[in-house]
Image (cartoon, rainbow, N blue to C red; front, side, top):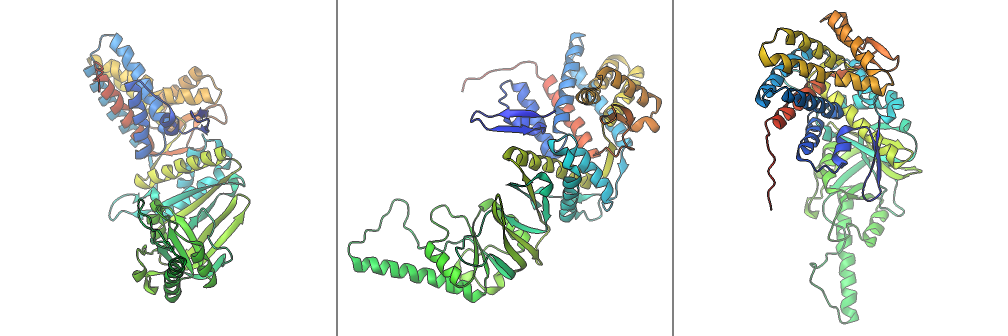
Length: 491
């Protein structure tokens, strides 16, 4: 189910993403803060499974409380949980199937599974292929190793209000989410020469606390003449270099472009796009394959890059710039996500981020698992078997860990409107019967309302997500178990 979060300023967020929900909650209890940190760690490590990791940690804490009531020492529980984690990870890794990264179909299934729990799940046929194409465009194979490196900063997601989620598109190139600064200059340039400048085309200003006082009109005229000459000089240099599209970095202290500069640039038919954010400079440079030009002396033809098409696209939500055909560019892509309202667009953006992360996880560790609570149920079954033969307190800890893992299928069943107890029992039976065999992929089928083999339903999730969720949850619970007192200090 989704949560609606109301901020103190009245802003409303509707989301399903565990990390987003916890990040916006004001948590006071120090142990609860550790759980928030836990979901953030999972978000950084895997990007998906942020809810599951907190749910598993909560179930483990619940289980350890019962063990403590039995009189088992926290250190013993902690060590027992570590042993249980090793067994669970072996089971989960054992049931995964290796993936070939050139096989688009397997990656699509992982992306679609990630999108299924989201508000935009009905659009997963559109968003999942976009996520897969984006990751495949930016991934770099590791030399001699398994998997590929993916930097999610190379995928820029731009959110635009207007249209529907179905209008989302992948752009091999650069999208700048605001209009051109020209008044009546060109709005579409083919075979463009693009330059990115970090200086301003406006008259120099004095420092913050200095003023220039002009007393007579002749001096005033001289100031204006100089100003015009100064700007004309810059514009002539731009024309000489043959630049047809100019990107200007946002400036804080003074206007990046004065009105006079825009007038001159219109005359030489140069398209100007101002207010490129400082944090976007790196992405723009990587996409276009250019270097930012910091001073007028370096504004020469060899510092410009060729782009096949730069156009300003007009749509109901406003105008934006699209650049395609950057021959010298690096591996980056832009994704434009649209939606009818701010809440929908923001949630579509977050869901797409989760899908991108799911595909990135497969790229990092090319293996997939059955979804729908199957890995957790399989691990729980294996732990229950191991607990029978385990000596001493380990018997209890393994048993408790096994019961705690069943919280995932039980929650899935509850959200699907099934009877959690019946479903989990049926699932447990399926895994007990088919240890390593046909039952290994049995999970909660939300659509049909019963337990089926998830591999036939194409519900697959990356191994990295589940493995990292189990490891991080266990680590946090062990850290909390080791604490016996909270000390408040006065600052």
